[in-house]
Amino acid sequence: MPAIKTDNLVKRYTEVTAVNGVSLEIPEGEVFGLLGPNGAGKTTLISMLATLVKPTSGTALVAGKDINTQPLEVRRNIGIVFQEPSVDDLLTARENLYLHSMLYGMPRREINLKIDKMLALVGLTDRGNSLVKTYSGGMRRRLEIARGLIHDPKILFLDEPTLGLDPASRKAVWTHIRELKEAHRTTIILTTHYMEEADSLADRIGIIYNGKIIELDTPAALKKKVGRDLVFLKGAVDEEALRKLPFVNSVERENGRYKIGIIDSGKNLQALLNGGGKIEEVEVRRVTLDDVFLKFAGKAISEDAEERAEGIFERVAVSKTVRK
Image 1 (cartoon, rainbow, N blue to C red):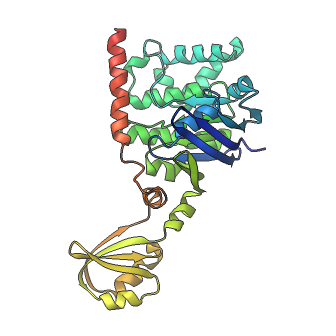
Image 2 (image 1 turned 180 degrees about the horizontal axis):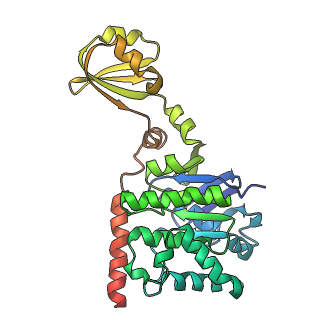
């Protein structure tokens, strides 16, 4: 049985169809990347799978439980890390985890040992008794992952878990996600605007656009569909010789240099340089997942990520001011 199976899942609001007939299967233990621009339907789809939003039509099985008829059973089997920070600043990490454990009805005799285990998993053992308001953004995210895992869910939803974090904190979260997959076989559904993150972590990627899954495959296979890497050359370039090379599919002039479309630059770059004349400057750009999204959806997927991150943390700052 797959970890998640959806059947023609639809969510309509008054004037908008947020999710439009999504059918997919996600096997147990897979890291599944869900990519799409703002408003594409990512969060709505996750909200339905987590039983936070009721579908207009269609259904889904999550850990073998029906989201329409067995919502409580679904919730017992999932963990969620939301887009916006949701841990309590005025509690310690241990207190946050203890409260979550009680809400899930975990046996009291097991809770403290499980808290120790979760803090160790996310590298927060030495800060477990510190107030969360003293944590960095990366530490908060790691605590939220620990909270989402403490009740041993079969499936973990990570809705943009590294949004707004600095590169070092982002990579620390990536490390913990990999450890979860390898050590616990947790099925992880990941939404993100960061292409490097999706490429590095996801076994498969679904591209959602206007509420529909328009492409679904491994990162490597999706990039292969786009086709060519690009090589930029400056110097006494032999354009005619380049066009005759079997792995070259385009040669153009752009801003005073040659832009060459090449199949598998890693394999064919040296042959290109050997046959291309007297080359003075070389730049190689491999196909990226952003190129994939540009091809299939006609716009960049990551263009508004930083703006959204700033908005989220501005709202958090306002909330803290009000609470004080």
